[in-house]
Image (cartoon, rainbow, N blue to C red; front, side):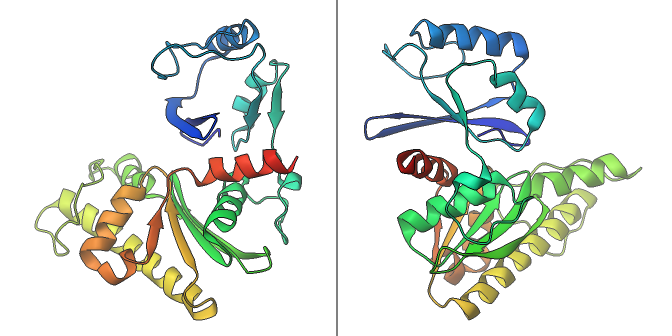
Length: 251
């Protein structure tokens, strides 16, 4: 999965799923990886799988992407198979729906049941819901935690760029850095709780899945501020890959 910030990888080997992340890779390195796969070798210097890994020559690569420039770099590989929206049997998909959102909600619904709401805490924080008929209900998009914190540091003259704190900060802060953390985090958590409440008003008791790179931060804050919400949320980092795996099996 080619995301806005990184490449997210999964290797399915029997019943075992290996996952890892890398930065977006330069064209020269991608060519080296393609050569390795063509020769039946695993490029260990890039992908941290331990031990000797035997793979077939021209290993199939299933790819979904929200970054067209990165997608083009992988199209030189003869066995790349790009997953597109029209392959996902989710009703009500609109043309500009992110493939990552569609795959995540499809994977969540297939494993945890329908209806389902997926909260993806990545570069963007997204909400995507689907009903019991596998029909897209809709969702929302806003800047993620890291993006909000960075934007104040980059777009203002006096405010610093702040890291995401490991624990819920003090609400009423006594310094600028803590005030930024408080303002963004408490507002985001209030929004997450509101979206969950609204979803449960329409679909009582349905599954809520939390995924994405900042999932642990969001979940930790919810546990501290609203443990009754956190107790009903499933944290699953691999929703997109379970969605991709399902699509591949359907094909």
